[in-house]
Image 1 (cartoon, rainbow, N blue to C red):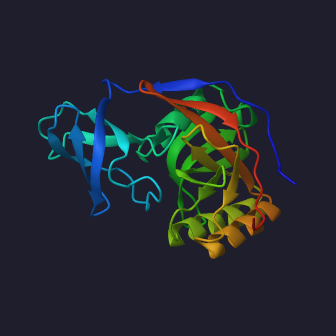
Image 2 (cartoon, rainbow, N blue to C red):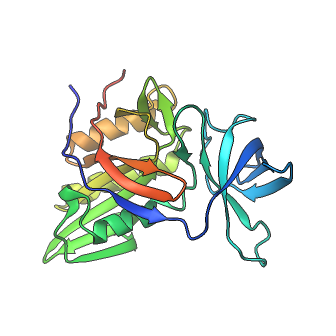
Length: 246
């Protein structure tokens, strides 16, 4: 049975400069990509995504890149979006935390409203640094954000490669939950062509199994689908999810 949540209001994050259309030539060394602009110019751009980008990094894909406008940067441009099919996909993993932070401050995510203080990048006593700590009087809520770009069978899947770091985050969230804190595993899904979320059992069964254990221990699973446009990213509906092997 799919668990579901209410929809949330949309909040846009706007790129500071207009995105530039291009075509992907290749992605290599994890953080580099070559693209061809519409005028035929080839650029090497920064790819802020440590994942495998499975299904997204094939040559010939339409892409959108940003220009930092900073001449001091070795690579002034960054890969922002890829279009593998009918939908654009956000691939810059430096942005989800900024979008979620704005959504938390604006009260856009209904289930995370009402906290008096929102602190990013906070170290926990459990041994991990989490993306957000929300507090309300004596209550503490830890939120970890993961960017989800993989799509299989119409579902968003995570991870797209084996992740030891992800396992540690789940273990530490379970420890914090056992100590009485609220804990939320928020999956940020910047693509419109998915209808649900499921862990990628075929890619990392250890992570998928640990996520099942974490949910059973009280860690909340919150898959948030984001809107993706040329102008920016926005928090959209909460996706239903199924943690079982499918």
